[in-house]
Image (cartoon, rainbow, N blue to C red; front, side, top):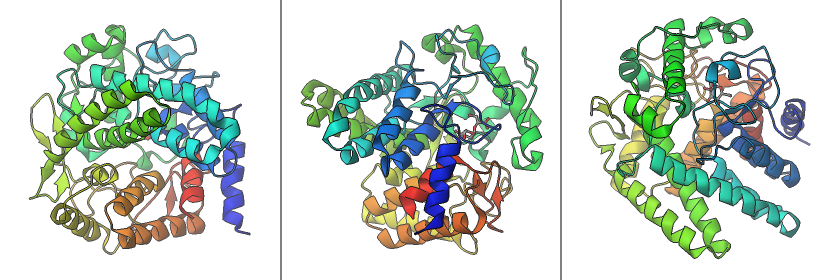
Length: 416
Ligand code: 9WN
């Protein structure tokens, strides 16, 4: 018996708050969107009923326009900032006003495939929710029909303080109407977290969108931060493939045609973001019109949803190998050694089990099972050595951030 498997399951049980799982106690005391999708895939391996419950509880936060918010505040807590009073949204169960990467439909398809007959009826309402959210992404975040979806807040990427935002975020004022009262640095070392200046800009954006009444068209017009983002778009395309699959399974032909059209448009648009000189895909800053050239993990995530030509895949993978060389734990979220690289500071260098999970799936899809296997082993070893930390310092291997972390536990169950 692998005791790490027991530990992973215990973490998911301890972080259960009644059908939904908090990412970790105190630091993140609510339900987070993409965390829950990863967690549902973990549960799917041994308790499909609980996995469905996780997704059902997330959907309780879905807005009438289709958005599934990045946080659902099911129960009050004083240990996190910003809480519902800062977001000022109007949903009955309090939620944040922004979203997060749409891993949901990817989880739903996996869950449906393992659930067996007795649970199958639970897939359909969740499929409807996923489809509504998918439509929201294309109408609210790609109103011009480019095929790439835009983020209006770094928190929407799930990679909050990534160097990818340095140029775009620098344009956002540091002034806020809401006082910034950070709680995160009371739970973990400030050197592992975003800087105060980042937080002031994060909250400036929240104030700006709250003043727009959280109305997508007004936000689009007023947004001082607008990035057509490659990692989120790659995840959306994989989710779109899985939705199309479920639509066909349920005989929803019109839905399948609609989603296939989204997918085709996005596939073409993503290919146009390949930069041979960088050996990576890039996001586009919609305010300056320029490529986001910062060297981060996002540029490799298209492996997940594109079937790349051999030449492109080979170039991408040799770049990935160059980044991982000499590291104790792959895969770094920023290219080692460049000026913005900080191996302990959150999304500016550390390795994250859930990012590795996406990359591993993408490497396998593109016929590089050997590279996927190295990354899988690196991830599993890091967790077995250091525990279920939020993320890992890729140089020393040290577990960092919050401990007893739900998505690290789910990733372990999936990857071990
Ligand atoms: C803001 C919960 C979330 C993850 C994100 C991660 C971090 C929140 C924060 O924690 O973000 O959403 O307050 O730092 O960056 O990816 O979903 O684990």
